[in-house]
Image (cartoon, rainbow, N blue to C red; front, side):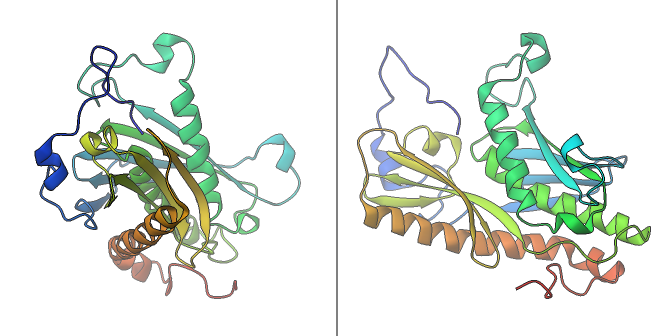
Length: 274
């Protein structure tokens, strides 16, 4: 979630037009157009440009033949994530982390979320002692950068695994579940799916929901910006997120279908794990 724009110490008022209609004309339960461009960067083992409306995130996966010290000699692999926003991904230029001398708290939080989310999708024991390093760099931010990064990074990880499989480096297909993320929010009594920046900065309640295709929740990040919300509203938001996630899963599947077929992988998710 990007910080709200504050003027004279006050939060911006919700315009009447916004209260009646979303800025891009979408229905309340309609997500922004989502796409995944494969092989966006030619050097990475897996690379995807994820686009959700005007939010652009490039997701690159690097395979390293080593693991962190706590996993040495275990035969198990690891996945870790890194996240950053390019200086002009936003309306005003942001300083690079390297210029500030330390990673921002927001970036640290999001990259840990990316790692946790993607590890939930994999049987790490089938990776061998390898590490998948997932770099998510925001080229343009218009809300939902973390959710777009997670959904796109899953596709990039699948591409990297297909390359490892083609090399005969995997004993079996290690994807045990499909993972994606979406944002939802409350504006008054309206539940909105897939928040753009203008919405994210104005809603009363906003959530980021990471879940698996099998129906498991990986993480639910939510807060009331002004006031509180009821349990029934939380349930309604999760139901809306679930419907939105089904469309993300379908888009991921469509993007990967031809590559999976070429790689001899019949199903994106292995059916051997309950």
